[in-house]
Length: 460
Ligand SMILES: *Cc1c(COP(=O)(O)O)cnc(C)c1O
Image (cartoon, rainbow, N blue to C red):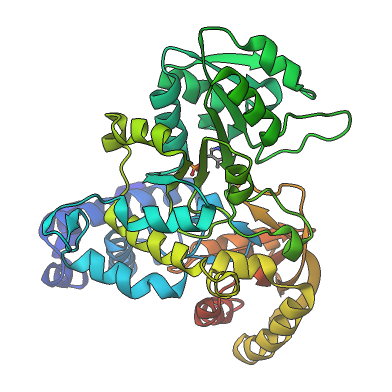
């Protein structure tokens, strides 16, 4: 059978393949033919090749699919049916619609990124969001960079390089593998001075650790885990008191950085950025694309004198924010001027705030439409479950939700998961007790046509 595999040159002469030269350059076509023949060889050896494998029409069809796949964008939209709202692997927060036009205008035209239109001279890219951030958080100054990891690195480099930064042992967190506080600290040149025990740290631990070498007191939000039981942490207020006592700056990496009090809405929340600023913390850093619901960014707010050091630091240029991000961030932040508008327009907040009855009602409506479109072998039912916040925020919070359970006669949940995940517009869900589930919380309104086409392709 292997001897029957034709040579690449021969396949290129087949009319059904040769016509593709009208649409693709020769080297691209050659590469696709090679890939298909290699795949056929593998299938023949595994005894998996069908009778079509070596026919002209069979090979030509696969070459066409190979070319289409190779020409498609690698980064693309997916339907998030996982129920994890801030899903780092799926791009964290979808942006609010209100930023769409500005984002496009700034992307496809010139902008006043670093041009002061009032004075007609060079301006600062940071000026577009600084006043807004100060207004929203109550801080004196603000700066934005590429992401929160960069914000922490810049702040530590500017405030504590060559000096000791004091941090509680219980707060030496790892966020998603590649971000670890001790590693970032080493990279910044600051010397880590751990205090307290894993479960308990007291104000006296910080006081006793202060020496002439100390440059900074640091507090890190334990984003993705919770310390329960016999625990005690030093509050931002207490840390600020110690900082004043020894004339040391106090910094807090608060991770998610929510600007609205989510406890009222979700029944579980984290302190807001405003609370840290009000407590007198000198430098607060947080992410743009976690609970804030904006683009990937790192936001730094705090006292003017400390932020001045960061604005002059050479690292700032290496972690600077891009104009598209700035456009999206300014648009997202503007919504926070009116909390009701933020909750209504920012997808991340809207999804988090959705109640179980709302999601069930949406599910019933959607199911009626879907059932009309899918083949008879596909069975769709609504089940109850829980969704997660994700993004290392509120790890213990379970949000009651409604999910669509998809079952297809003769097809396992694992197989369904693969079929839906590998589509042109992939649909990502989760498997629970041999069922493939799609959580309505994270399915967006404009996902519906995509979902409809994906589910109606099943069971055929
Ligand atoms: C998420 C997080 C970070 C990293 O933020 P990115 O925006 O992902 O770079 C840093 N610190 C804490 C406490 C976090 O929760």
